[in-house]
Image (cartoon, rainbow, N blue to C red; front, side, top):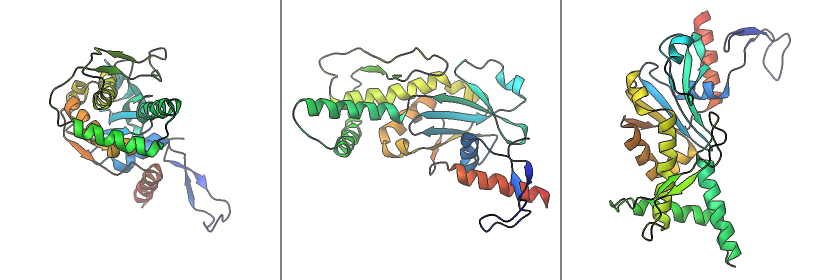
Length: 250
């Protein structure tokens, strides 16, 4: 039974829902989230940056043609109406920033001081936003894949090009932001989106909305117009799929 198609109907009333109400086959959470914010299936790509990070667009052909020449880091997810989502799903996103903040909190505690985690977050965001006015790139290179990746579970993070003048928190935060974006851009290269006719990227996710410098790094890496949307809501997407089914049956 295809997702979003009719699976049956309620045999009896349930929680105020009358008997005979159509029941549709279950949907994937990610697919439903994409459905909630995707506007132009031919020209829109999707980026979500929350605990983890995903970038996706709708394939233009069948599964075989969509899969041709894709890197190992990209997967095909079934979508609605027989289409496929071309997806790079990274295991490293906001969880990396959370790990960094937890590390700082632990260090501060070991030094005998106390700072609330919320205060650390706010200070880091402020420092990073102030630091972006410094146009000199101090060259700290952070590859923050501390949780590995599905296509390379054994990969680990690294820090390179450390010098005496790039150890400030602003440098480290910029390096983390850039490293997260570069990892995503390696998994889903910008040229791949452009070759598929993607004209803009709809961006969502709690982490993205809180970190302006991360937004800038994404814009710079992909060089495609970004439109920031409220976070994709899978329940709303499921409701849209149900509406599509009802409209089709009329």
